[in-house]
Length: 217
View 1 (cartoon, one colour):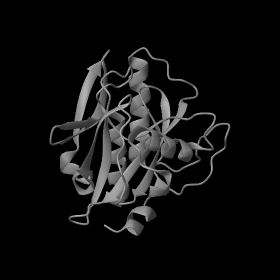
View 2 (cartoon, rainbow, N blue to C red):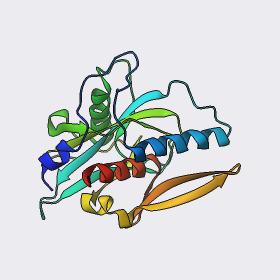
View 3 (cartoon, rainbow, N blue to C red):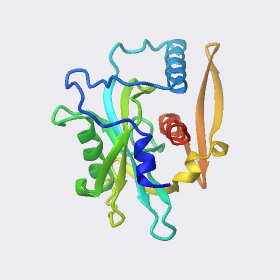
View 4 (cartoon, one colour):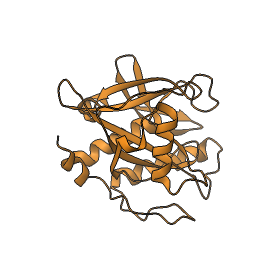
């Protein structure tokens, strides 16, 4: 899969309104359905969906495997002592800070802080639609190509582990298991991608499923 093929199927990275940090974008029927399902789940759980979800962003880092030339995805396992989502698999990223120029800056800054990949080793080629999460963030996922000579320097306050998963594995629909839970008589479905000892689920898995939909069209 060539870089241009991936880039042409992503949304363009244009600047955001600094007040709302909301993109005006076209979402697929699948993406709209997932968003409505999340809102229903929040209501069923007694959580009033925020009128304005907090802005955040993540980086989906893609790097060419030096041995086989195929794409790998860089993922992290969050530190177990963290208050929110301890021990879960995630992309590097975090909440927008007022010192950030934009959400793209947030994703790059957080990647450097969490796992040590430098700004000049990241080439942002596009993004996925903004995604609301159960923790009531509006997350913008940016896709970035990472220089093959990158070095990992983990911030142990935030990350326990960094690992790679083949892009082709993550995109394979056969590896994307849909799980349904029922809370307060309201069903909620989410995806789980199992790779070796890792269970990728929640918002991270949903982003990977969104990416697979984009790259399969």
